[in-house]
Image 1 (tube, rainbow over the protein chains, first blue to last red):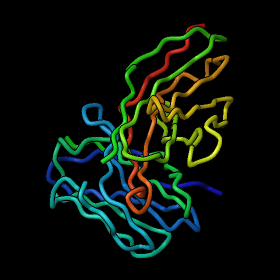
Image 2 (cartoon, each protein chain N blue to C red):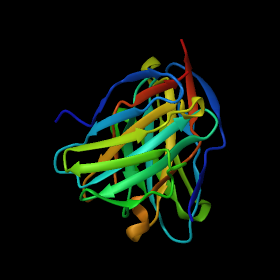
Image 3 (spheres, rainbow over the protein chains, first blue to last red):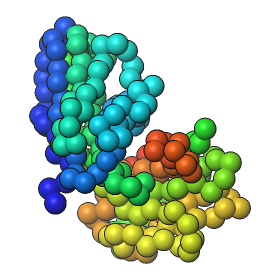
Length: 112
Length: 115
């Protein structure tokens, strides 16, 4: 299995621009999670989906953040407009019925 | 709500020496427990997990962890460290039931291996 796939691996953008991060979960996994990792705050859960439906988005920091999962094999996390404080590594993770989550390699976002 | 504490931010160990990383959790019942490892520039890789049963859990890369209910701990151990074990290690806890869909991660312990 290819594991969780994220793209792009690195993104550099300017403040105010729209950023879209992409994730392909492991086939057959019915949960998908988006996390953000920073030095100051560690690993934070932003939102998670079950069977393509958003279940808990309480970790999404602001309305500037949105996430979608149009089908079982694809999810996006969008930031519009982006700000320098959004700079972080964003991880996508998926899991099957058991609770162990499997993480992608992450997208390192830098907002100038 | 559950919480996780990893008391050691950094640990330095010599290659070949044993390693123990501490993890303490707070939860009203027996939680689900995990250890993940993150190498520089990489995602988190699952080392091992505890759901129930035998309190000594074997994982990948020669790691093991022991669940101690009385101490609310889930410490990670390796008898002989290799240079490739230099990484950051995260303990995570999940609640039982639907709430367990959300994992709470500790702040991580960065391990440096001396030759």
